Amino acid sequence: MKQGYHKQLNRIVCELFAGDYHASNDESLVLSTLLGSCISVCLLDKQNKIAGMNHFMLPGVIRGGSILLNDDARYGVHSMELLINNMMKLGAKRNNLRAKVFGGGKVLGTTITAVSDSNIEFAINYLKMEEIPILSQDVGGNVGRKIYFYPDSFDIFVKKISYNKSLEDAVAREKRFLQFMQKQKNKEAKATNLTLFD
Image (cartoon, rainbow, N blue to C red; front, side, top):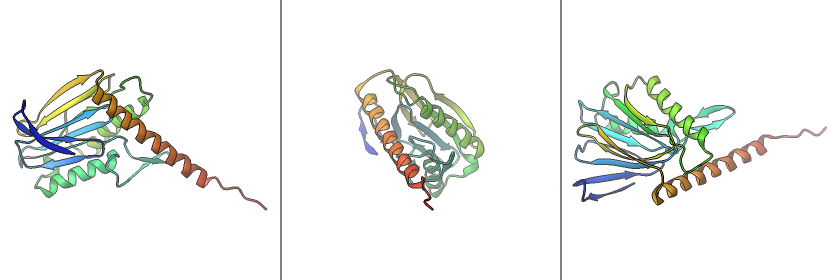
């Protein structure tokens, strides 16, 4: 996460990267991120003036066909819990939360279509399960997204990006993480393949 003054916006901008989440009661702060196949969920408790946003890469650790909890915020399952819990520590009430969802693009000809679709499905289903209303969403398609979230108004500005160096770098990070996860999965599969000798 990187925070600094943005001249054009005339505000402090908190920029999130994959695995980041941030909760704040500072209404003058702008939360921002760049998304490829990843998802960002923007949450607001307007009554208590608490906002939050995350940026996750995968729904969860998948083992044996089921998604498991993991303490890495690059996974949606943990990222959502961390975000909501941190907002509640600042005074947010769970039943006041409203959501807007972004990302899950199939960008730069990547082969991570299934990941994009899984991320979108997870985010929508998680929010439904938690009974957090989704006020709007901009997901899927063949573009990346740069988003700016204004907590004071719950306005979110989206710049759709078909290509730039930052998006290419973001997608490269996503691919490296997915390759790492595939290696871990292969190691686990080998570890569980036992041969019995009589």
